[in-house]
Length: 404
Image (tube, rainbow, N blue to C red; front, side):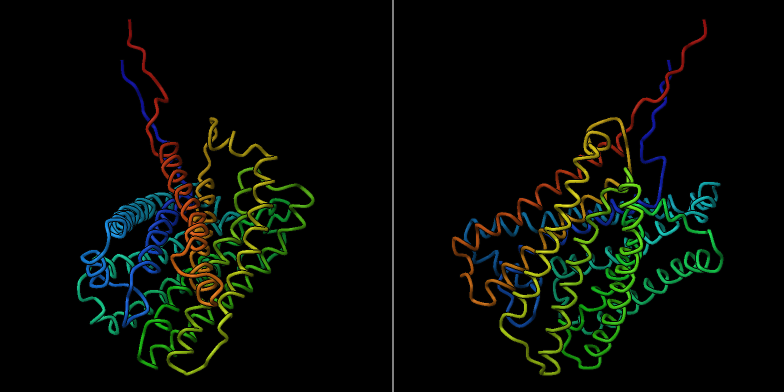
């Protein structure tokens, strides 16, 4: 008797790139431990030497934290790259199918922007891996910054080409875009790709000491970020009438919360740009600027999380796609909001509340609030592994009956 096995992920779509993106995001959540809990005098981020010194002189609790953070970064960065490579291979094979041609002539063509989005996430995660695990990296970092900006520029060009093909098709002729089927925020995916490249492009603004590098980083990231925000506003406004008319698309319901990661990335980009303006160009901001920025972002994020939760619950999304027989690659879109919320909570607590003197670092209030960021992180780790089992575990789909 011969059994045939198949994985749900074998029926591939570009949205599976979100699995790689979610893993990369979880690596970032573990870096938050090191960024805010490990001293790093002399540079804006902790590097291998800072982490090793903190481990050597720290308490058992701090040592355990460093081990957990390093293990989490290594695990999810590896998963991020593994899933990226798998998706790139799947995409190459997908291009020779009829399904690909059908995709290119539908609203779903913008799903291809998940590929440059995943590439940008992997570059960002790889930089974190370098900081944490490569000794002496900071001594050559000024050479790495221009190279990184070139990589992000190339990713941006790729994203513009993919989006340009889509917009050229739907805008050059009428009736090429199905407005009634635009009943989700799926069309915000291109903005997500651009803002991910923009936040990577903004890193040298916060970390470099070379004015030219900082200036190029500021200009390029501001340009990309502005385009991303404008596109997100237009795509979001265009989608609302279809959602009000037809309700939110069943498999597209998680996209209602795509605003959450967009806002987190915009917030990080803005703080990096302001840091570069302060340290390199002597442009000083107020002590509460980061508190106002992060609080505003969190307020909007909780609003969209609430809207998304209500719709998901009303549509029984979890019963259909997380617990039931249904499988949707779009379920991986649920990871990004939780990851983004965890990261933004860390920034709100450390750059906002502590920075403005509202609470004391490592006090009772500090750890009480940090517990919410860690809880969101743990929930997303559980969700990633649950989705991985649902989509990548092999199942028996047919069983051959031996001849009599």
